[in-house]
Structures are given as structure tokens and as C-alpha cells.
Image 1 (cartoon, rainbow, N blue to C red):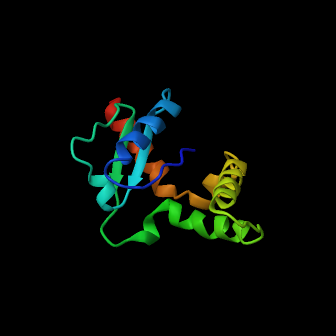
Image 2: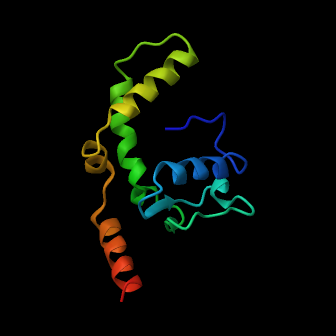
Length: 124
């Protein structure tokens, strides 16, 4: 997890580099909507990270949109008095997701099928 002061064209390349460094041994699809911050000029895509654009105005297709309600429900039980406490609570909650619980919330079968098809096409 990487918390940045903003989500904009200046910080997205930094996040992308962090993400790529965190998963250097795997091929990764990064689902993107059409947010302005995803349109950073001169954006360099690492070879093991590929963007997948969703159709415009289709938040129901974005895997993360299925995870927000669960995170919000968990956060509702936490009392915090400062922004720093809220930030720490969110970090703890996100880090508590396991490699099986997060995909069960955010997974779509068609992403796995797309990866399989892309690998099959790339390797003959």
C-alpha cells in the first residue's frame, strides 16, 4: 500500500512505479477508468504491467468498486478523532485483507479469462 497526498497526474506515475516494483516477477493487469490522473503525460508502463481500460461511465465494471462497501462497513466500527487516526485505521484494514479475501470481493471471471487468452496468444 502506498498513501500519497493526492491522486492526480503528478502522483500516478509514482504509484505505478511503486506497484511495478512490488510485483516484479508477475504479469499484471491494471484496471483503469478514464480518470484524468490515469492520463498522465509521458506515462511509462513497465513491461510486466499492462493497462486495461474500462468503457467510459462504467464504475460497475471496476473491481475496486466492489471492495469499497466492505471497507466502508469495516471502517464504520472504528472511532477516530483525527485524520491521522483515520488514515492509520484504513491502512490496517486494507493490510488485513488476505490473498483470498480481496479477490473474492473484487474478482471478475472475465479478467482471469482475458489474462489466460493473452498468454495463450502471446505464446502461440
